[in-house]
Length: 200
Image 1 (cartoon, helix red, strand yellow):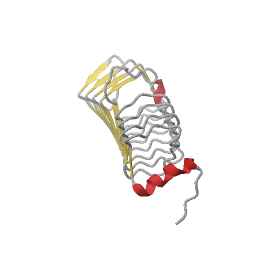
Image 2 (tube, one colour):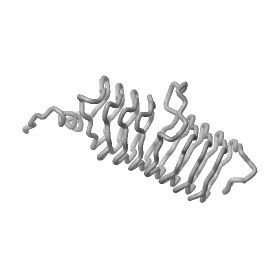
Image 3 (tube, one colour):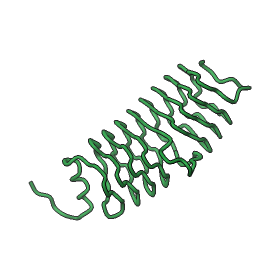
Image 4 (cartoon, one colour):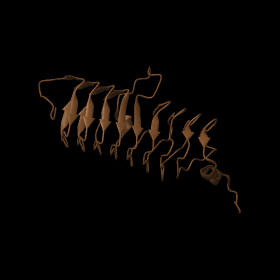
């Protein structure tokens, strides 16, 4: 299917391929077990939509609006997701694991401020200037991700996996990093907040 139907509110097990819905407003739609392949949702406004067990592959979701949208078991893979305010979505407090996963995505200039996303997956992503402050990302999988200029402050990173992640700036005084995993050569960055001098 390559377009949405105006009089249809529920889509189940449908593959959308090459769909261009940029700068559109999509209200009150529900998507169950749907796949979105090479679709363009740049600057699209999703309002009160629900995504369950969906897969976005090679899609453009830059500056997408997700006000009051619900996500459950949604995977984003090789997507461009720049400038997204994830805090505006309707996150359930009853979910026991993170409802979204990101693989090989570009996620620059986005905000997860104050969100509780235990176990979220963000692997092999480019996450420049992303706001993780005040959030709970315990047991997250952040391996192979570039966190250049991203913000961590009063962030719960207990048990998070930063294996082969790079360019993170995490103040150990103002973040919880107990049991978190870091590669030895990159973990030196954690010492930046100690006001010490490192010599070879």
